[in-house]
Image (cartoon, rainbow, N blue to C red; front, top):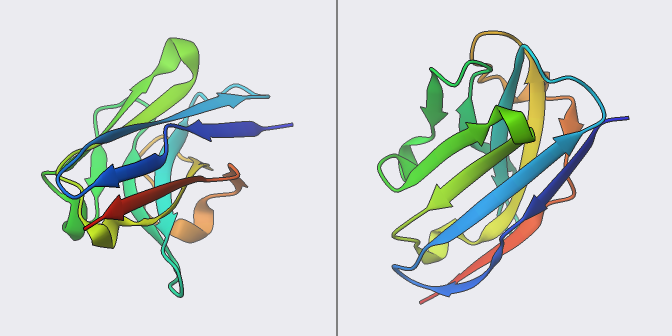
Amino acid sequence: QVQLVESGGGLVQTGGSLRLSCAASGRTFTGYTRGWFRQAPGKGRELVAAISWSGSTTYYTDSVEGRFTISKDSAKNTVYLQMNSLKPEDTAIYYCAVAPGVGLVADPRKYADWGQGTRVTVSS
């Protein structure tokens, strides 16, 4: 049974930073893309960042490009999302997820396993 556990969310002021972590267990994640999604109040879930199994390819949605960095520690089965220069519009629940695929998977519909989410609140 796949388990994804997010941590690192919290309350931060505009311009601040947070580092989210997602620890995965329950299977071998060889050949899987790891992704971070977010869902703001009243909005749909969007893919924020993703990293391919090899770590050589990353994806960022336009609104976080240059501010967020996704990385992974394969030995720990953990993926991170470093979030800098945070803005109030980054306020959301952040979820990590995995999708099968050696190459980077950017289609949200292919992400089958999800964590419970961690809340990020950016105050103005």
